[in-house]
Length: 544
Image (cartoon, rainbow, N blue to C red):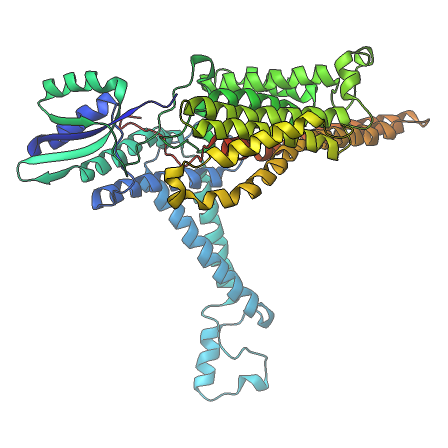
């Protein structure tokens, strides 16, 4: 569910402004809009955070992939000063290298002596080739300066590489807290002896907050949101599906406050989409093993999510008998394997369209149930009927079904009446009547929405075919007769092809999940459910 919010207005004595903010931060229950703050104190804190990040990047760039046994702790200012010194020396070295290259063809002559002879009127060009503009120093002196400069750059880079970036990284939470506190302080306005600030608090926390405000001596006003206000969104799914909050945060999405929490269907269908898009049980096993190996480093929510998606993929591997693009002989006669292995691919497409129509009809039926007993609920149930008809049309178009059942036309007709008759109330015709004109296009687009689920089959099949081709390339190298050393060399090449090929295919599978699995949930399903993902997440003012 989406937790109800209360708007908070808080007043305190201006002289205790900082203490009030400290107490609010320790409570960690109030959302403050800190993004609008841009004062001097906030800018200074953000500048310090940016400097810390720049210092860490400079250290890592200087170090490269070389490990450091005993790193040296330096403060941010010293690290940046060292990095800036290296940058200046590199710039000077590049300029000096350019000058050396320009004057190198003329040899190691003394420019001071040449200038003196020219001043005395001696025509040096008659006896030697000299440049139009004389260099600042002898060539040998410039080369010595360049060597000294390059040594200084090397020594400074080595010193920078020895710095301990962790000594800076541990300060990140404190820097983030400084920024947030400075922003909150700026947000808290003053009027005479009174300071005041506004924010949002979850309704379940309201009573506890009232009790705390009495102890602190604050004046507070808690009320429901009014028209025009946009509260933050706090999603609280059922316990089993709570890890979805981590996925929403990772994707940077949140439903609007007035919309629905779709965590449960999102997680269920996402796991199914993940499995079908990866399309290979062995890849799922790799994901599963990697998740288990990183169990101690992963946050609990991400561990649960990755375990769920990995196990789903392994299960799909058993259902389709696909393992590294090959199959297990004793599984070939399993009913599911034989059904999915249909040479016309009709069964696989039927499965995709069925998943699609169930996904979209769920959204519409859910809407209808939520709107009852309002008359617009009839339109939502009508949309479910339209989707069912479009599902039958889709299967008929691609040749899965032979024609469309006659009863479905009655369903479609009744559904159209429901959609056109109840989408807009008679009292809203003046303001929303134009929406009726868009309904024919929306009905036709429902066909495209169902067809779009065929991507589950297409992308999964592409992944399997790529794996099969790499397998063929690899096994082809060791086929036939040949000398033992040739076979050994070909075996090494075969292993390399398999590792690189399946590694690339695995990476592409991960990309397809981000593109297709996310899209089907956040676009097709969400459009029918009425979720715009236009909200912003509830982020309480608290210590990191």
